[in-house]
Length: 420
Image (cartoon, rainbow, N blue to C red):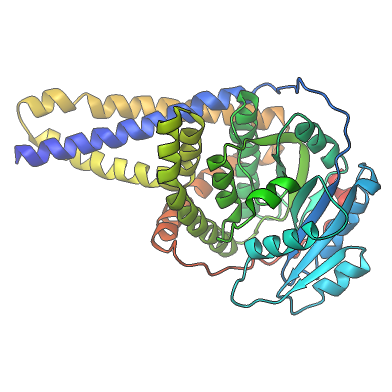
């Protein structure tokens, strides 16, 4: 009995310490989102970009992004637009051609998904006689701010081979679900991405609104084929010691799901892909950090933990805490002396950290003038959104070998001028 009691109390404290450590780590880093780091290295080079849009049956929205790209402030001679119509059965390819894009049509019902489509397009473009400095990747439902490449260009001229732009929402107030997701992105943009960029820590590729050096793709290949290709490519860059930059001013807007079912299906796809890519890279990154005595690989691991394993750790923490408290209340002797103080103390410390994180979140939302009168519904929606990730993460881990791709429907026809 005493042996089992000791084990349960030990495991409970282990999960508490793990969650407390990870929470503290992210809490401290989030404070570096208050200011904006300026680039020291200034180069006035206008890089050339091959803009790549992967589209599957997106005839309703494909021309919106092409119109916004034609209105960029960046020199028109310095970018070309390519659309890869991936297994399309509608008028996506035809509409893209009418709106001025160069179109690659791809038909492969075995290797389906955005990762395969991007790899197909990259290889096609690399074989062209015209050479580009960077690939720029967008989704077909995106609208791009006119000065996007002006800000991105500053970051690549500062030495980054890959840069993520700031992902915003086209339709934050369409429903409580879209507001909840938009709030998560508003918070993530500042407390996760901007804070790491300010500290000089590698940021994360977010699936759209990012650029990567063409010579890098030519050298190491894309080969990110899982259903969370952005997470896989981020970890692939981490293994290669390639730091991902971030531009808070380079904004790209995409359409968020307005229905809970659509959001859940989309996130299950992400969770499966993140789990698969994470488990493939977790041991190599851990070994790399130990062998090379570098902190960056561990930061990349914690990035994976935050999106995949942190919710699981928190659930296990609660389960073992309940069990440990019951045992402590019914036990005698040194178990009470050694454990009765640790659970409530760690619980208070953990929630102090969480309260501090909420302060950072509210500060960021206030500073960016987001939500306004919707702030309460946005915050409660955000909390619900985070909690709903717990079962989704479990599903993703248990089904990580599945590579089926769920197509998120896009219907919002918001024009670029509507975004200011």
